[in-house]
Structure formats: C-alpha cells, structure tokens
Length: 570
Image (cartoon, rainbow, N blue to C red):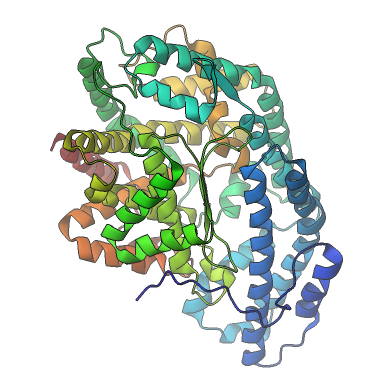
C-alpha cells in the first residue's frame, strides 16, 4: 500500500526550472495568487493547489540552505545564503502569506470546502491570522538568524583526549570506558570546554529572550509562553497540563530513576555513583560498539527497518541513494540530529553526529522514524496537510526506537550485548523524563520572568534541577558545571518550548509498544495509518488512529511506567 518510490511533485504553476535566487523573481507568483479571481469552487481548489506548490518549493529551498549550513558551520558562503533567505526573502513573504490566508478564510466559497477535510488546515490559518503583526516581521527574521548562532558556537567546541582532538559528541564515547579515571577526566574536559563559551551563550540567550518577549507583546500576549503555545498550535492541552506532567514525573518516574541508578551503582561496585559513571559498564565489560563507520550504521539501519516492514527499509535505501544522509560527527558541524522533510522532492534529509556509540543507534532509529513519517505524509494533496503536530511526529520517532528492539540482532550478534543494549534503551526511556520536565519547567520560568539577571536565571535553574534530582548520583563539587548545564540543550536556543512534546510522545510511544507486544501486525498498521494522515486530523484523532488515547495524566503515566518496569525486569 505504501511506497518509498517517492516522486518530486510536478509543477503546474511555477516553471519547472525555477529556483529561488531573490525576491524580485519570486514575488510575481505571490502577486498572481493574491490578485487572481476565484469565481467557482474549482477555481478555489486550483488556487489552493498553486499556493501549495509555491509553498513547497520555497520551504524546500529554505531547508536546503539550513541543511548545508549545519553540515559545515565554518563555510561563510553557506551561512550567508541562509542569512540572505532569513533577512531578505522570508520577511517579504510574510505579508503575502497573511493576505493569502485572509483571502481564503474570508472567501464566500470557503464554506463549500469539505468541512472535515479542511478543518485543521483552516484552523491553522485562522491562528496565523490572529498572530500576524507587521512589526514582528523584522524581529522574526533576526530571530531565525540568531538562533543558528548556537550551532555556530557549539560546532567549534572540541577537546583533546590522548593527544587527539574530538568534538564533544565524539568525546562522549569515553564516558562508556571502563577506566573510571579517564571517564572523569573527559567529563571534566567537556564541561570545562562548555564554560569557555558560557558568556557568549548567555548573551545570545538574553537577546533571544528579549526579542521573543517583544514578539509576544506586539501580538497582544502578556508573555512569550502564551504566544508560543498558540503559535505551536497547542489546541489540545494547556500550561496547567504541563504542570501536572511535571508533578507526575516527580511522583511516578523519579522512584524508577532511583532504582535504575542504585542498580548501576551496585553493578559497578561503587561506594558513590558520579555523573561520569552513568554510561559506564563494570571493569572487563567492553563498551557496546554497534557499528564502526557511518556506512555500516546506514546498512545495519536499513536491514533493521526492513525486518520490521520492508517499506521502512526501502525508505532509508531511497535516502541513501539520494545522498540525503550526513551521519558522522566532525569539527565544524553543528551539534544535534534532525530529520528535515523536503516538501517538494519528498525524500527527507537526516543529519546527526555519530561517533560509534549505542546512543547513535537510537538517534538513527529515532530520526528514521521521523523519515518514515515524511514518506507517509508526502502524498497528501496540499503542503498544509503535511504540517502535522510535533507530539505525533515524536510518537513516530520514539515508537520506532522501541518497536525496532525486536530486530536489534542486526546491530548486536552477541546475546549479552543485545540484552545490554535493550536495557540501556529502556533505562533511557525512563531517565529522560526528569530532564524533559526540567527543560520544560525552566522555559515556563524564563518567559514568565523575561527580565532577569544571569544570577537569577542560574538560581532558578538550580532550584528546578534539585526538584527533579534523583537521590543516588553524587554531584558534589560539580556545582559550576551543573549550574551551566542548561546551555547544552539546543532547543532552548533554536526551538523554544519544543520539548514537552518528547514527554507526551514518549508516553504515546510506550503505548504503541504495548500494542506491538500484543499484536505486531495491528500495531504496524495503526502506526502507518496514523502517520499517513499528516496534519489532517486533530491531535486526539491522530492518537486515536494509532490505537492510542491522548492522555498524559498522572494515572496514565503510572500505568505506562509500570509496563516499562515490568519489561526491564523481564
């Protein structure tokens, strides 16, 4: 039913050979849409398709500029091409986008559009109209460029271990080394290196907060948090739900985190468990080495996906053919990992920083889940239909991590290694929740108190850290590193408030995995059918299509945590 043989959307409105170079050549297409007469329902549908085509090619152009820049942050030409789009093209598109939105929602023929088919699409447009302010255009352009400075600053961070220079992502593999002295040395080096740019990142964050707060004030909101909730299309939950989530993590997840770390401490035979021990194995146990080169990671991921469903493996193979994978860590490459959907050509691009660790396998499977989502949603009729909520997008990626565990023999031929890898994954599923709650709660504080000193910010961060701290790991003497640890989270800089999605989606992913344990075929069908809907349904409806209930109440969290604990014990 589903195919990885993805085709670039044929152009009917814009010439086939047109590329985005400047605003002068692009503006006539927007003018045409704005001035065109729409007299019949057929005219309206043709207009919608033409607008969608234009949107897709502009989106894809912007995506390629960002992809190229993050792959090589030291190349000034690539940075300038991205900045040019943000400062000279995007700001000029925005007034047209607002006018086109108004033209559609106010058109008498809009009432004739299929209400069910267009409900979320029109709801999203009304939201955009409500938020649009002319004076925010230059602010948003500046923010787009400023946010990327985080990657530029972080991309330069390296440390030297045993006379060899490593990026921070590459150096993290030493934290799995059985030599405790080496682990501590590397842990301290990584954190010391972060402190070198502490002030630069503090200043960058100050500027981002100020501009974001201004953007919200301009749009008539009392703070950026409330503005951003609206902008992110959070129609189905509130800030109060987020606060309940924080409390549920303390109540139902922290006790499990304590058990995991206590077991780790006993396993390592240590009197005190320190942060550099968390990823380690007992002496004599070699770190897991699931692959050695990025080529091997790709081949093994294709095989693993193919065993789950041949279609999944074919999607990754298609991306490999198109050279839409840049996986290994290197100096000058931005940190992190992402899957970038390409609206016109269809096959997405995966970017990550692999260094031969178990963590890289889960990142690849995670981004691969996003990629499958991109393939499944690409055939939808309009570009706007493919703009799915982040919460379901993260279910796609996180469920893939869990469901694929049955096929991890692809990465680990040794039964003991395989067991360790699965344990590591399930521990991560649980131990990530406090960090999600910390980052989310911190952002609520930041934007409720947009005017604050660095000292106040640090004090708030430390207080929140303490609230969600386990009672096993000994952090004494590491206060300076801990106080600065928020700076390692790129979401704070690049995609504000996008983090609780991981918590909501992790719960959805666990629910998906419970389904998979009961009936693999049905779970896989539900997974594909829900993702193929793109953003054409509301968030609760998308969860329902996946055989899930949209619920992240404390009671639900308790049930799901008990399931993961039983799987770990098993």
